[in-house]
Length: 245
Image 1 (cartoon, rainbow, N blue to C red):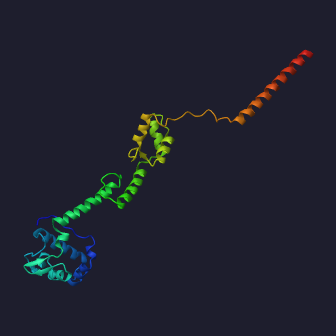
Image 2 (image 1 turned 60 degrees about the vertical axis):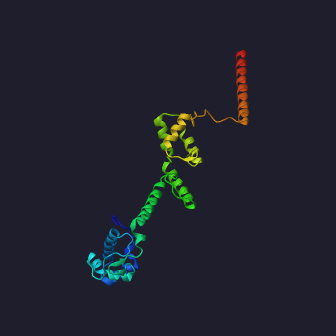
């Protein structure tokens, strides 16, 4: 069977069978892994199911330039059958088109999960509790990704020359979980422009003073009356002095 790659475990060098092969052949484990790769690649290219492969043990030994390698494979359970009809056990589990398809599908799902970490509602293929947990986590990630500082909002409003109150804008979206409608915010600048178009959050002119309470107004009225009476007394005293002259 034609093919340009095979599936191998990343921790194959730590497999006990590899350790036994290395000990039996007086080679290091990484040399064993390399020879396994050579033999399995050959089998993947020349066999459909790994059964009744028409070669003998001597050929496999010569393929990896290691006498006794095929015999060690038998002892490890990775080769069986007679010469001229050898078998690679569990061949279809690791090789062949179906195994490659499964490996590629698993790799694709892994890439999708990584991509979906950017925004929770894109490229979603899973369902159930795991999906809901991932959605909660990725929603938090999106919020921290798009949330600007008050300084950034103020600077952008000044740049556009609009009347949006940056603090009112920040308070609004902080309170609603940084959502635009029902969807997580993707572009905070677009949200500012939307407020600008809708004339929302317009900055209010500064108040001319604090509201005056009734008690404060009554006290002020009394003070005004006293001042008025004092002014009248002063005026009357001035008139009396002038009359006395």
